[in-house]
Image 1 (cartoon, rainbow, N blue to C red):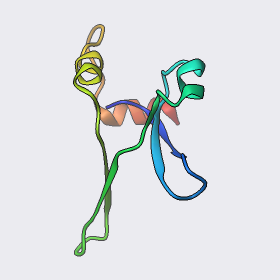
Image 2: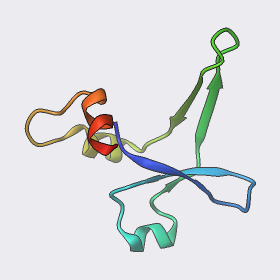
Image 3: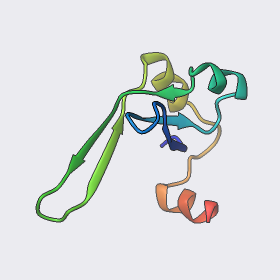
Length: 80
């Protein structure tokens, strides 16, 4: 999991995903924003799932981590 925020990238026309650990310079140049976000909604349970397309380089980078990686619930609880 990579933490980030949904951002407006074209005055309400498109939504992008901005990774939290991208430098301010890359963010200003638009490099840290992902334009391709797919959304899927479930008719039965009414849940929404968002998917972001990462480059192969980003996939390799974010798969690496130091030490034991906490599970998703532990990460969410530490952010609250």
